[in-house]
Image (cartoon, rainbow, N blue to C red; front, side, top):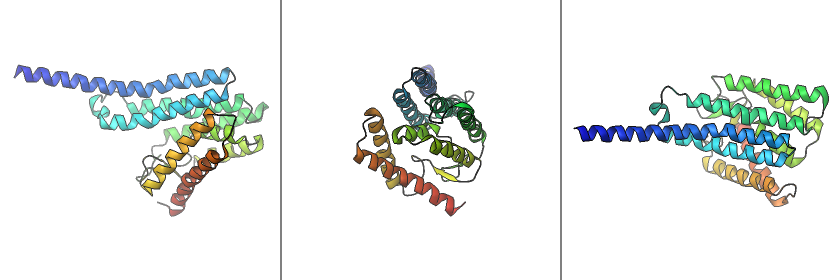
Length: 241
């Protein structure tokens, strides 16, 4: 019937509109990344990291929305996964590299520039790697989460020599088979992992919001959550395929 056809078209338009809204949510990460970069230029590392934290939240919620709304099926000629990679390279790699360089967390001179360049270079391998994830949802190699690295460097105030070594080693891990946890999708010890992830997010938000003041209890809980996530990644790496 004509009425049924019209109803179906309306429903389909609504579904496609919802799908485009999910893509717009993903794309908003690029704007957030720009705001983070502007904060870096203005000499505000805390504000830059807060913007990067917001970008991280957007990146965490757009995927579930996309799967729930069948975005790939509704808009088959627009690649949401590719869009996500473009935005992630900006917010996970480029802006953190500039932040670490600008505020001399990597020192100054050619060594700092080389370290920032290594961040960009090694991350390209991760973003182009078709075998980036295992079947049980671990990342293979260091997953180019330089925004998280920048957060630790800022909060813990680690010395330049330590930062340079960390950047060199983590970048090298990008080319290895070391497994890294995806805290929201990994099934191993899921309840504990989700709890640790929640503690980590809360701790990161607290420490950034109240920086430079540091609450030792919050810091201890945050580091304990970090230890669980890193430890699970190492356990999975030792366990092998």
